[in-house]
Image (cartoon, rainbow, N blue to C red):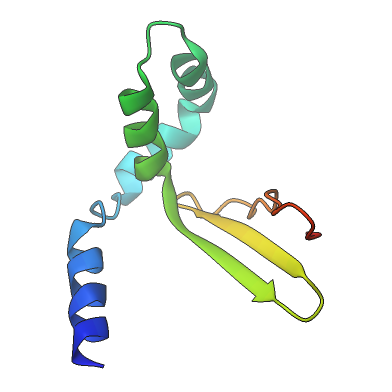
Length: 93
């Protein structure tokens, strides 16, 4: 139990800082530019990961093993709609 608590504390310390209201408003206005930046051939994989980490608060996956289903949900910083969309082979979402 103590190890799990220590792991959770360490993970929470690695989380990016929560964006301020001003930063969130800027991101909402710049949404189209973010898509262009993300898709630009000059943007590296590392930069794309950093961008996603700034935009995503958490990813929650609800697994129902007996039904062989998994429901992923992305929670965005801007409090937009969650996006379900990943599958595991042989499972349904």
